[in-house]
Length: 277
Image (cartoon, rainbow, N blue to C red; front, side):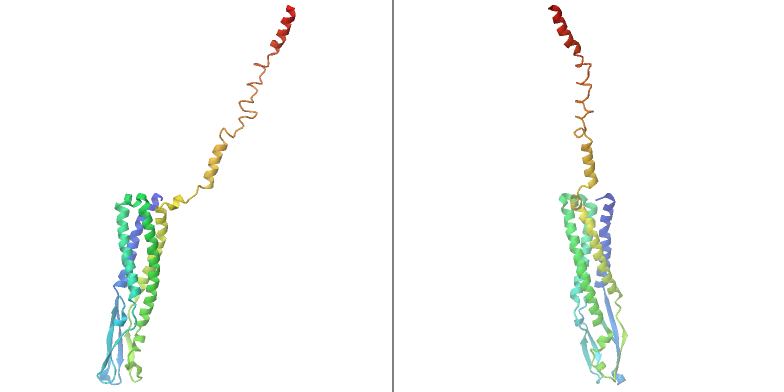
């Protein structure tokens, strides 16, 4: 990993912690409510302010409220419909564990860098955990997005009014006064998918820390060409035995000055012999 990329890797847990905090705070800390109005034909039996409060983890079937029946002073106890705690709690659990792991990773990156790189075990564990959290963020955010859609339907004032027996009579007037504010829950879904993008994008940087990236790379073609050219320029591939080489130069064995002057020897021998005769 390049030196310029190490600060980027160390800064990733800070962004993860921040996004995880926003995710579980906007969802786990939610509380809202709605208000309905039932105007009976007999005004003395009306209730113009029926408040229904609900909160995380959105077990709406446990949220009870009283409503007039417009039949004397008798009132009925009703409850909202649906239990969406599984998707909400799963989403918040992922956010909490992601925050804790990011906090621990920050401490390791800063104070235990040598232990982190020892035997490549730290980068390998970090890579696996990052992949797992990326998958969990995708699944958890998708499940909570569907759960939030169902929560909006179950807490819609027009849908809640249909549960009241007094609203089934045309002589009575049932109206929504205030709808629940879901902006923070919408923000939690957005931060959930942002966390998925952040964790999935960090997979590449953690993968490069494992060493698999550098070990899997092959030598580039230009490096091989440079190596082959260095051997081709050496003494083994030159024309050392050619016309310009050391063994074929005319100055070594082909010069007349050394062995080519044997004419005097070959001529002097027979002449002296003939004179003796």
